Image (tube, rainbow, N blue to C red; front, side, top):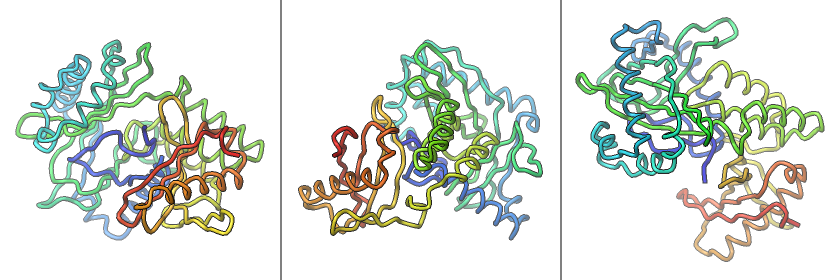
Length: 360
């Protein structure tokens, strides 16, 4: 099960501003981070600029650019061979001590990546200064125009980033198994670049790329199905974004398009939506798409005081799913199943999946 807005694996060196919601509402989280970054720049630009710096490939010296690219390609070779032991030894201490998440990611994707010939995109070099970790670090890379980002720019939004130098190298790896991106975060330790994070994703879902989902979103919009349109724009934006804490001109454009059809009656960040199901009401906190095997499912999270009674929680989940589809019948056209997750105050949840065709 893959949450399209969540990082695919833990990245201990960099803590993404994206929370554990979709698709964690990946779309909105990146925009919120952008607005927060802008506000911070307006309030104290000197402080921000003094603590963070980003260099594009045209800014950095040739030796650094070559080192980042060659290191990333070498690590890719280890990934394609499934050599997790060597890769672990070339990782930062935080990963070396717990490499299971990275190892699982490699194992799941090794066959596809072994058949690919990777090509490295121009790298980015992020520098975080200071004596302590930065609670909120924003990096603005390249040239920004009057309308925001340009073709070669990028922005990164990170929480709890330790001082140091970090390379971001994105590798395109198309093969007969899929069109993959392999994003490596490299941290400089001494004269070496160690692996600090790994993100592997197929840029297509069931053979459909971002443009296909944009076309479907536009079709939903023309039919007056704004809820489906917005959710499919979220999928499209996620598919073209190799990292959950990175934004580009392309992702920003899709965000702007999705804003035009964002439903006011969907739960938003910090603004739950109350759903009625008979005499009961449920406070929905998140609603987002998620890949479950080969299916595109709809996930709904809602608050409950406790999940201790699994039978009662199961019945609540069923009631929420049925009420949700009854309120928005258009969802039947866009998703295979619905998954309801009852979340208690401690953050633990209890989930139930129901095929859309079984929801009466």
